[in-house]
Image 1: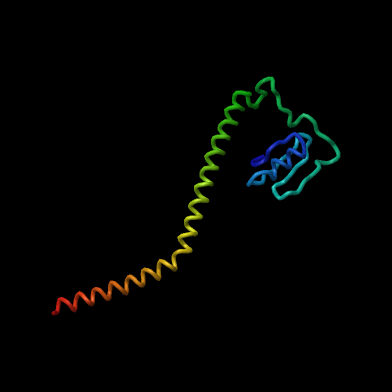
Image 2: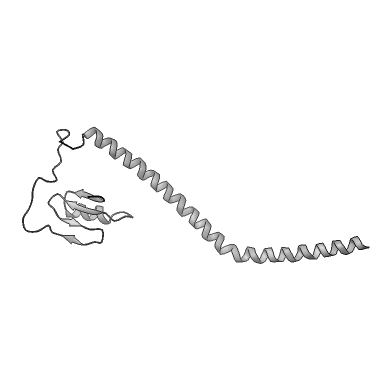
Length: 131
């Protein structure tokens, strides 16, 4: 269950699995699966109930309390905002890099012209010193 999320039904599972930039593996409470590749499975003929039950009465053996769940949700929201900011910064830097790569030939030509001019001025200066 490494990167597997849980959804109430197939419509929610499809929204979660394909809704963002990243694809998720999603399983519904009735056992249907939406894989990252887009394949969907029905879970067979027999319906298993209760294995994915959530309890709102408090922590279950090995479960998470409502307070802890809120803290985890808040942490995810903060990290998601940080990720979005990092992604925006990355995209901006990538755009700048591409602009510099596009300008490189023009800069090299300009540098070559300036080098020829420097050499010419240096030769002229040497000639003037000899006089």
